Length: 206
Image (cartoon, rainbow, N blue to C red; front, side):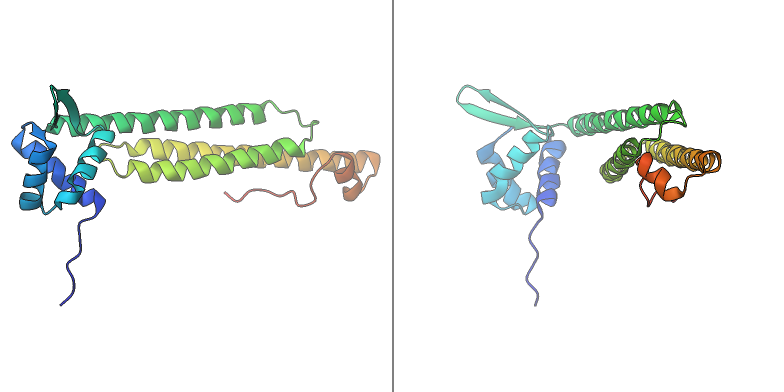
């Protein structure tokens, strides 16, 4: 017969919250240490750690009254905490969008005659960082039922637009190289060397 699996940290937190939400009452730690093992299968030794974790996550309130510390949480507390977390994620998304728009504006104002490979490298690095952050935020948002998928779609569109802008910038470099080659009879290697254009310059896959 297989050994019974113990509760995970998240399962303990969910069950502990059920004690508060179902009773809508106030508890001292010693009371929870008696109730949790009997009603929710949470070992007495882990009750203090689970309760403190819920307090740290702003899902349970605590207050010292006299010499005793009381803990409580109502269903609306969890909802408000989730809403606050979602708002934080929304702010992160907005910051990403602002950065993307700033990069797009910078690319749009670049002159064709100013071939700066270092700038392009920085843009590619920024794009990579933003895509990684987008993926991380998408995973975080999936934890919340009231998350809005429009933000994810918006960030995807912004990233796609940035890729298009970078490819347009690359196309301008190719056009400039062609002009210099035909006008001054210079070969590609000489042009690349004089304008610091990387030999592996290429378009980004869309």
